[in-house]
Image (tube, rainbow, N blue to C red; front, side, top):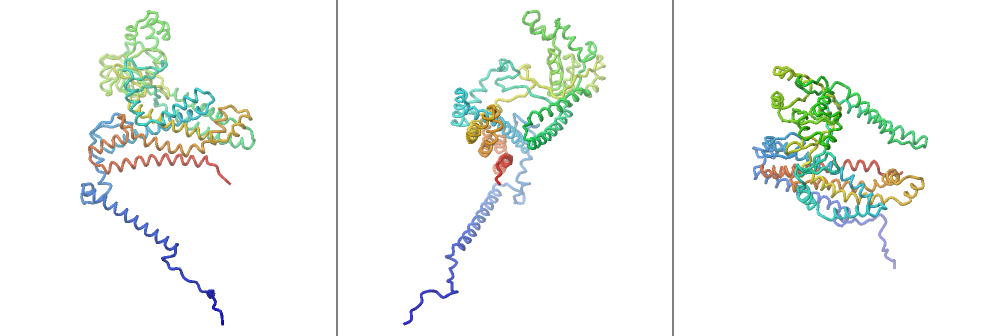
Length: 539
């Protein structure tokens, strides 16, 4: 009997049903999932549009368009903002108010990132120091800051430190420097650019370009000759030479400022002011004023009576330039300021001040009118591209310099200290990720500890440091929204006030989210770009 073959005949394949084919099922599952996502998004959008229409948000015809939905931004804000980088008035629109808040957030974020990076870098290095005291101070700082809530730290800084500082009359001056700490905040010197600074800045731009070209050329020459060249020193030297040349040229050009004085005051040039003050005080040198006060030969009342009185418009660079010249010469002075120029001129005409300082063009226009009462002399004042605006106590407040309110100081210091502690741990971990053999090789070559860190360790550690550092920068930018807790008018603070007054909750939240998202994306883009630049390229 013939045996039946159990083998399938050649060329015959049994087809797998599609409902059992895993490849087909996977494609069907993806199509179904995508369809559900699209339906879900459409439902959310339709529901949102319907709810916005029910709330009366949208255009008169019932449609939802950006031009209509955000029309409220053109309405008058009618609320004040204590600090602003740009001009702002309560009669301005909500849009400008939120722009002011956004700029304040950017200012806090940028300064916080800068200071936190510096603090964190030094603290991270200090944690690895062989000095027991230095390493333990850094350790305790990191542990305390990382393990206490940021909001609690902000409250402590604002209510427990800054608001408990003495009043203006007893402001603290650390080490006798022109820095004042008081209940009104922190006042410190700040550079002010004069009109001639445009020439100096142009030279600096050229110097940076030349220094960059020199840096690249020296680097290529170093590779060709295999001989080390101090590129930072030579590049910096070239930049300083070009910038110094620009400073000399800008300082010796025609000045933009002057003073108007009565011809009864024997002044024909700026140097005569020093001679007049010496005669008033009866001293041989202005440098001996302090000694005369200590010996009793000169009293405070006599010094105040002899001091020159200056009339100036508030914030005018002419006043900063003149007072800087007087401070440099040691000439005592007092300044009477007003926000309106016409009132300043009236004060000078009525004899409340001995001199009126402003731009030469402005003084030349006013000289004929003022000369009708008494002959006036126009004296030019030497000008430098950059002047240091020093704060000083005048009456019940500070004048000049840079003022940091207690609110701004609290949020900036708080973010710096808090984020700096996290950055310190990132820096420490990055340094420790570099093998110990690199350190031993650097020491064998005779490099100092500073050179070892700068040339060997940190360049390699940056590849480990940058990715987590990006997260800390983003956290700092988003944590700046806690500024509302200390009363600083940042983006969220102004947006919250706008929301309460306008009632446009959805639009305000969209603007705030878009603003923080934009800031975070910019930070991420810059750090990711830098991370790609320093990453190792494998071949």
